[in-house]
Image (cartoon, rainbow, N blue to C red; front, side, top):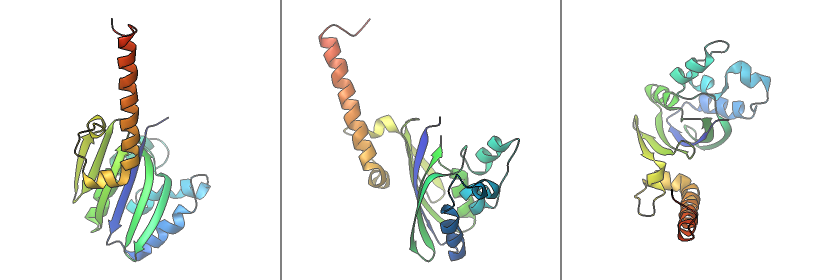
Length: 179
């Protein structure tokens, strides 16, 4: 079972007809055979699809992640702007973002993977990543877009880390820890 990477991405300057297709396609869902035949959302966006042998390497090379989106939500903000929220396996789809930017689309994304312990922001063709352990530290300075998108997750992780520390301190105080 993969670690799921949560992503929130705003795509601006897109062709309205592509947004229409994304909205229509997203209603199909993963359980529908058409989703598999068409190759998923990333194939729709990039125009690249491969099935059969070699799919894993193809997906990493062209999408930047193992599988297509999971749990996608779409919010169309304007005729040419859409916000997508989704999960991908193990990593964000940075190669899809690069493809879109090469097509003239403005890409602004944030992502969080608690299992692999990192978060990041993709903007203006650059991905800046942060160690998740540093982000959950009480005194950390968190980039605004990451905080705005994942505040609840970060606060939950801080609370969990605090409880773990208290349990370890309690165990040490009672002689249960150490070598």
